[in-house]
Image (tube, rainbow, N blue to C red; front, side):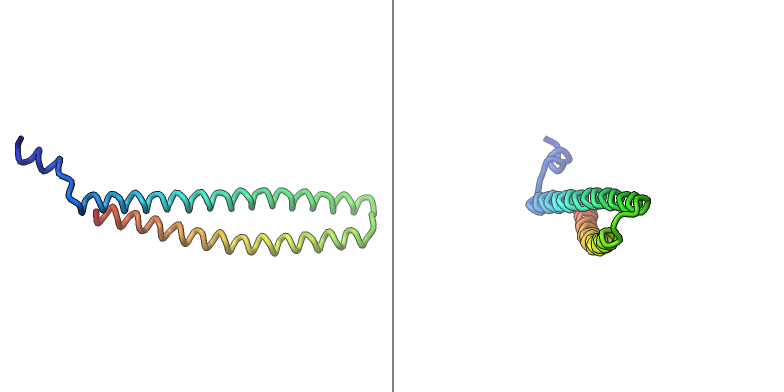
Length: 112
């Protein structure tokens, strides 16, 4: 066996460790992406419910339904908006974690 063939086939402990770290960081990145996707999908469903309630409010205005009911529905929408803004903060935090994981993967690749 030639020296070049022996070198190509050689896996030093440092190389194995680097590969394991890259695999772990890549898996962490995948977990963050899955969590982010779930949050975004939940947000889309919430927006759809929000639109449905807006349609109900509009329909109520045409039928001149009880003002108190319309007022409560409008307050409910405001509460939902507040919850959606809080969700934005969660998504923002998840994006920061995702960025850190991606930076770790890049570091593994560059240093590996």
